[in-house]
Image (cartoon, rainbow, N blue to C red; front, side):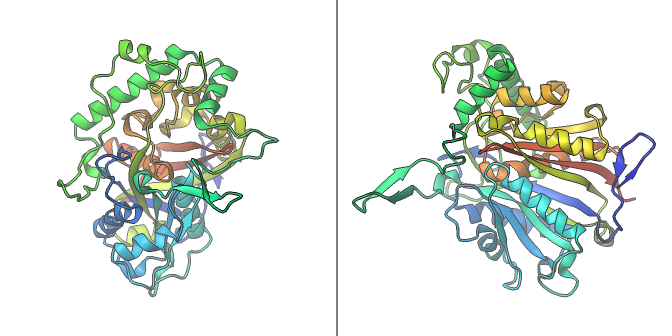
Length: 408
């Protein structure tokens, strides 16, 4: 990295090892057990992979690897399954990443690191510098979880353990209440933020903002083309009527929390040199990534710690950021993290976030990057800095910093 006059450390890798994202797409995000309930995870993801190849002109046989995040699937390497479903040659492998909610963003970060390390030997000749990366979640079709009881009969459980008893392993909503209490995030602030997320998402949908980044999905009743989460009927009065959802007398409600969603998102990661050879007009150049751990009881703060370390390492201050996408699992944790970083909440998630669009666990981090590229292209300004960050079950966070660049 090298420093610019403004103090930001610019990527100093050679062009054949400088990671850049040149395309990003997602499916509609739909409530779990709703419009996309008939599609398995690989069926959600495969159409996105096909469209990415078509849009960029990358030959399927020249993909080095398919790196995909997934949190609650049935195992078996959904990245490989989706790659084959998408029609990629059998010579193209697949790698599935599980860092729970951060899986999609970490999959993209891993692909970027592979580019920076010199690529990977994957498919055909010259295939080492193009990766498909992202995330997918079909909560609707996720397998039931069970382990053998003393008598051998299955004993069902709702989620995996994320931390030992010595640290505490709260459910997500309880952890959000912990953050709200520790950092003084009042109920009114949470409700106001949630309402703004819905209104921004509704406005973006009405303006056609999401259309170019969304790949329609075929189901029996006809193509699913749009997100189904943003609520036109939501008002301050409606939000005020929601009771505490997780802790008696608490401030975290169903109204200021996200809902579970099905969906997928993926990007094309390549080197700056290959991007130009492909004729790409622009992209998000990776400046750095960071992952951090925090106390599991305050897991919602993971994104803030990861982003803080990343910004310090790259010489970037919060005021330098042009675009910010943060997964809105709970309004409480978003506000606490943005407060920690000194970022005005109005600057984040310009088109709404997971509070309105839903949280498709393993896909959500990749949705953030898809949104950043779309926003950067909407108002193209060379050198604009873009930050994606997400908090993760078990007390972790991942962040990635990009710079938008035009190649012409």
